[in-house]
Amino acid sequence: SFERCVSEATAAFGDGTVFIERFIERPRHIEVQILADNFGNVIHLYERDCSVQRRHQKVVEIAPARHLSEKVRQNMLASALRLARHIKYRNAGTVEFLVDEQDNFYFIEVN
Image: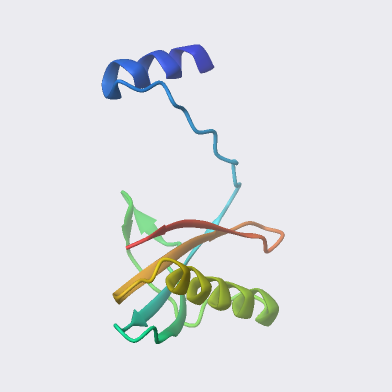
């Protein structure tokens, strides 16, 4: 139950804040590699599908990601660049997304 989650979070972290995430059935894990420099230049090296995993470790990376429409691909690449610029990211990194069966994509993390 929600109350139990709040209780466990409070006990473990001293803060009962709980985030509820959308459940995505059969998601695809798509990553966009980015490079950003100290002058505000940011580029992407396109995307790869990292959905095949075992014990949360990638087994295969497929590039370009298959079964991704060109419209979704371009929107995802643009979103990765926009995010990197917004946070003034400087480095090589990966912007990760989940894609549902309706081709909606959701940000996971940057690392």
